[in-house]
Amino acid sequence: MLMAFYRQSKRRTADFLGTLLGQPCCPALTVKIPNQVTAALRPSYEALAAELPTQEHLNIDETATKEENGKAWLWTFVARLFTVFAVRATREATALGVFLGDAFQGVVACDRAKMYWQVGRLQWCWAHLKRDFQAMIDRGNPRSKWLGERLRHAACELFEHWADYRAGTITRVALERRMGPVRRKVERLLLRGMQSNNNDVRGTCRELYEYRQWLWTFLHHEGVEPTNNAGERSLRHAVIWRKLSFGTQSASGSRLVETMLTAIETCRQQRRNAFAFVTAAVEAHLAHQSAPSLLPTV
Image (cartoon, rainbow, N blue to C red; front, top):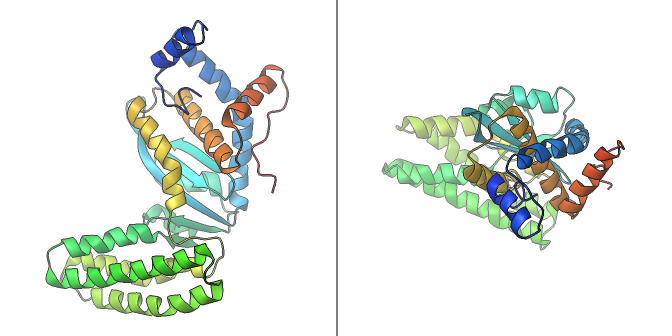
C-alpha cells in the first residue's frame, strides 16, 4: 500500500516501516512482500477480468510505461463498479481480444485510436474531439479556423445539454430533442470540412463523418457518456506512480502494478477500504483460504 497507493519508493517504504513503526525492513523485503501480495490478490483480479465481456459498456484507455527498460502499455478497463488494469507489451488490438474476446456485446467509450475499431460499438470521446477542433483553429489557416471555431462551439453546446441532463434539470427525451440540431450542425460542418484544402483537416472530417454513428452512441445507450473521462481519471494515479518509479523492472513487477491498481481503484468505486481488503486477501492466502471477492454485489 505504501508503494502502490501512496507512491513511495522501496527505500522510503523500508525507512518508514523502520523509523516510524519500529518494524525492521530492508529494501529486499519490499520486493519479496509485494510478490506475496500479488499472489494473494490474483484470484480476485482474475475474477474481475473474467467479468469484462459481460459488461454493457466500458471506458477503455491506455498509456505508455516501461518494463525491464523496454516499452510497454498500461491498459485500463473501467466498468460501472469495478476497474481492471493490465500491463501488456503492445498497444495493438490483441490486448482487447484477450480481455473482451468475442463475447463482448457492449459499448466502448474511447479515443479515435484505430485498435478500438474492431469492437464496432464505440462512443468517441468528445473531450478529445474538442481538442481536435482547437487544433484546426490553431493551424493559422483562415478556413480551418472558421471550421474549427464552429465545431468547437457545437461541442460546447453538447456539453451544456449533457450537463443539464446529468444535473436532472432535463429528461432524456429532452436531451435527445436538444441534441438534434447540434447533430445536424456538426455533420454539415464535417461535410464542409471534407472539401478543405488542408490535408489534415480534410482527413479528420472525412473520418468523423464516415463513422459519425460513433459520435452519438451515448444518445441511444443509457449509461454511456459522451466522453472517456472515466478512463482517463482511472489512469491518473497510475501515471503519477509511473513517473516516480520509472516503470517496472520485471514481469512480476508489472503483475504487482496491474493487480494493486485494480484493487485500489475498484475499492474506490465500491466505497470500500482498500487497506482492509488487501489485508483480508493476504490473511486468506496465508491460511490457504479462498480470496475475498471484488465483484460488485449490486
